[in-house]
Image (cartoon, rainbow, N blue to C red; front, side, top):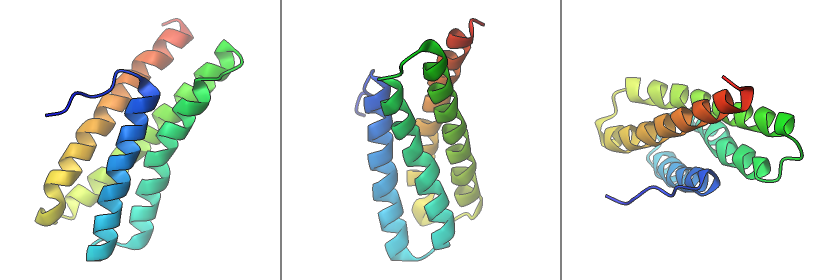
Length: 120
């Protein structure tokens, strides 16, 4: 098992890469509706975009806003992965489980970041 990067932006980028590979495979298989896969891709890749932008935040308030948005996108990604998992396509189950684990880790990290930035 590979070690996850410690840097949040790099970790988000790795998740985006894994997600895109999954979506590409699923699009070829044509098992899931394309719109559902598109929603998943938009939410999942937005996590990394928000975190990358947060690396150059101009204020603490701006940083909080970007991390909170990344958290929202990560939570939405978890939802879309649950929708896919509930479709019970055994060919995809292992990949979905892996992505769900990565998304859950990002949610946990981002929740901690947002709480700290809010002073909680």
